[in-house]
Image (cartoon, rainbow, N blue to C red):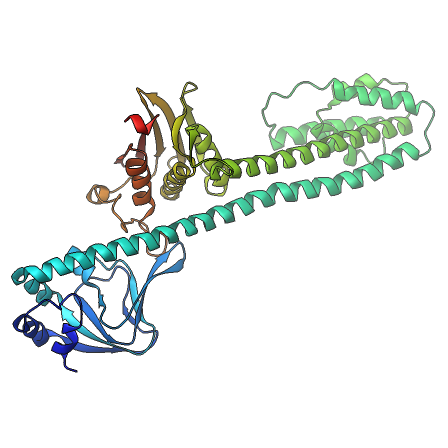
Length: 466
């Protein structure tokens, strides 16, 4: 079968006259690909379109470190025409699934065809729209799965930390209880009971914490003073007791309150007893803190997904932002987060899980930008939420390098991304735009300059009335 007959069987060219097809056939060239061979890569310039005449090819897009299969094109399919029509780089990579034969149509030939044939232009337009819709839906699903994978990895990481802390504290608590039991059961020196009561009273006399961390140098100085005091009073192994006493907030002044009527053995026994008591309390606190952290993460995950709730409900935007921060804690660990939330912010009628997807995209993008902040300033993420008449306004701001002016108008376009290949689908902001603007009748805009980028979301409190 010659090239003209092959092109007649392609929907894109089926309405063309033999003369028009003849002009195309004069410029087409055959191309053979072996299975697995690349036809072109994502971001390559679009200089030709291709018609599959035998075999099949697969369209794949790199996203979040993996490949997403967008489509499989078989005999009669046109490949690569979207980049030609948009005069843009290739949006995805194409490779042969099996030994494949194609016809190569140069861009100049296709441009000439569209200029002289309205029917070809209409057909190409229909194919372009269908292709965009199919690709967008597939990649939107892939983007959600990639986002779910990112969140899952982050949640697993966040759950692991407090779970490991609880386990370590529980093991330490078990060891400390053994030591405590040994102290209780050991032979007590005369007056040991009174000495222990005095020592335990020191715990209640510790000054309240100011929330300030003492420097390593200050702690070392206090430990040296306590160790010297213990040594002067004949207590065995003072270097073992001194650090625990200082970290418990007990200094030389408080030790003096024990009195001079205790011999070295009784004093040492009493101090070891109080150190063991403090350690047990500390370990119990660590178990409680770890369990609380686990509970917070599970509660945030449930709130983020709006489990067991209707699709549309009264949504607290601040809670959604906070839940998202909990689940993205692995990405904000080295970022200073500033919150500027109006306490009078009203709830809005919305799709809670959809809005949380918006917060995730915006915060994740901000964290990516903050990874490029230099040493001259702290990477800072600022979240704002305040009433705005009958609406609410939520802002996600970072002090990263900013969005270049030449691409600012395209950041909400499907498949457009400023991230390197394989690190983004170019759909996160486009999906966020659809959720905010189309599904909630709101606004999503961006202001950017070097050192400050602000994504602003305006949402009506009741979309049905807007």
